[in-house]
Amino acid sequence: MAISRYDIVVVGAGPAGLAAAATAARVGCSVVMLDTATEPGGQYWRHPPGRPDAVADLPHDLTTFQRLAAAVRTRVDHRPEHHVWTVTRRTDAFDVHAVRADSDVVVTGSALVLATGAYDRQLPFPGWDLPGVFTAGGAQALLKAHRVRVGGRVAVGGTGPFLLSVAAGLAKRGVDVVGVVEANRPLGWLRHIPAMLRTPGKMVEAAGYGAALARHRIGVHTRHAIVAAHGEDRVDAVTVARLDSAWRVVPRSARTVACDAVAVGWGFVPQVELPLGLGCATRIDLDGSLVAVVDERQASTIPGVFLAGEVCGVGGAALAVTEGQISGRAAAAWLGRPVDWPAGLRRRRRAQRAFAAAMHRVYAVPDGWLTWLDQSTPVCRCEEVTVAEIRTAVDHLGATDARTVKLFSRAGMGWCQGRMCAYATGCLTSAATGRRADPRSLAERPVAAPITLGALADGDHG
Amino acid sequence: MSDRFDFDGRAVPFAAGQSVGAALLAAGVTSWRTTRRGARPRGLFCGIGVCFDCLVTVEDRPNQRACLVPARAGLRVSSQEGTGRGDLTV
Picture (cartoon, rainbow over the protein chains, first blue to last red):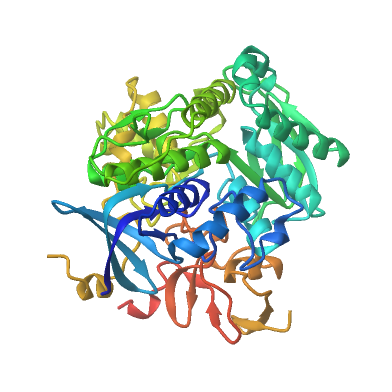
């Protein structure tokens, strides 16, 4: 076990982590940045090893990435392929434990910036466990980092502006995108024009996707959803249906669309394991996600722990960069370093958060999707727990909350620790009990990344 | 694309920087595991190491995430049934 000491440990090398590390290093702090990937950039700036230019055809702000990556290269100790599994507190420092090539590495910092990002939120539907069904983020990651197309004829569905980015990227790389199936009616944007006008960059981004989709003649079908996937050993078709405003299927609107892959996403799930483990206060965000509470300097409720990006509320890469810049300064200031505060920084954050709030309202997820399920639909992919088994836990075994449903049914007890099914299990439990499920009850994961008993035994965890 | 790894006796080509899972998908392989309960086929789903659907046996070590394991020339990759620990069954 190797131990080393820094002023600041940054967890995550996406937009927020890169900005935090670059900013803190610029004001003179010693900074280490731990990240699971081989390359910096996170999900947004994913690229093949050493080749950020290879994703120049896909829509994202590469200039900002190049600038942050250059700053980090010269001033920050970047540790790729480090999977942080826990953080422990000492009186004056934090020990960050990471799994690296099957051994436990500990880095110690006087302050922490946690920028752990998010992954796609998933809703179960009949056939969603068939090979060929991917998360929208997965389809994009395969395209960006591995230059692999998930299929030749792909249906993109779910809700949120991210779907447009995924569809545009797939089309640019030669995939026949059979349509973007958006469950909401994003004309709702019109009601949020004040928030839009404060963040003009977002308008340009959306217009770019719109133009790309038009160029490739890809239809965007609003108030529609992919409600089932079909196939024997892999997907060969999906059922697309029209929805009413509560997301119930409109009778006789279902039609079958042939495809060889599906990419679905319903917003994002912030990775809050590390803040939760440290005891940081949390709240439920507008999109229903459990997020960590921060003040205007990105400080959590635990002294010395700062948070940036999706972990304190899903809001996209530009907001994550802003919050990274604030948290890097705030962490340095907390350590007693003199820090400059550019006038526009916190104003920019407020405008970008307002935009994110507007997006959450437009792309809300009402409970009508529960009506698409049948009794045999798997909810927990790891433990293969069906809708019927979750309902049995409530109706026959007497569970009254999501955690008890988990204990009775094993939903969320598998390898992924409920990351894929916690949202759905919570919704199913709420629907069956009539009481709103508390997302906290399924979000705690004291071991945030897999570690072998051998690596644990090697480490000094006294 | 001259480099290859072995998947169940088949040579699978890969590009520099690709994961085992990405290379398998590019070679037209969409599943390489069957589940413990229903023996259902599974392959890549989240693609970023979160969902654990793409578990595969690498160099006789089961339950590795194919989306995270970098492809290397000569690597021995095999499909996996259930827990991947059939050798321990008594």
